[in-house]
Length: 297
Image (cartoon, rainbow, N blue to C red; front, side, top):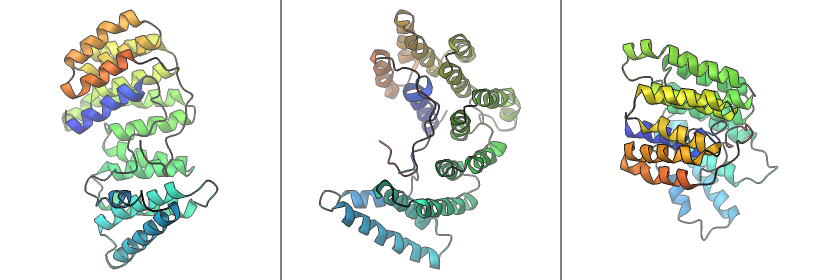
């Protein structure tokens, strides 16, 4: 499994899979583009000396600059990515009560262009779905997620996004059904394109939905199935450990945390140890993903 994909699902498990999976955005909107010139870094260097008003003015000037570039070169992807990043920063600068609709619409339009220019890169479509959901366009968000899953049924980010959307609508059974259908069709999908569906990751997500509904026995059964499928994969092991800890079964959870740490690559062991010693958090209420205008922590 590639490191970026593995790291993403590890973060899901350790941060949100059991305790707060539903309703957590899979991709921070800031810094989502690996090759984008870092306009956020440019503004960060002056943040200590600029007032909020000065910083907003600086961002607006940069936005206008990239808009002029796009007037000449409408398909300039570097400019599109930078413009999205800048507009999101502007949104984060706006005070409560200020009109943000036009800014969000501008972000949507830029993301739609990027998605069309990069049909094989699902990141842009997933980002588009997130922004649409924040705008209240749930159907538009669902269509965007489905457009990814129709061609890439194992896309983990689109799967989590769609599940989070369903959970925000209080539809856990629909979320479970989506993941079960993905697992049912996984063998065929992996025959056509080997490794396209990470079945263990999907099992972990499925278990987390059961856990969020306090169906602990069903969640444990799903994790056990995933552990049996690949005994060397630490992800379902740590997921089950966290499930047991959430129920106050610390003695049963301890050996699983130790086993997960032994199985995990070195870069994840500290996170697993922290999860083992952290205080349990009550199951949260279902909530929508973070606002498109907020910066990731």
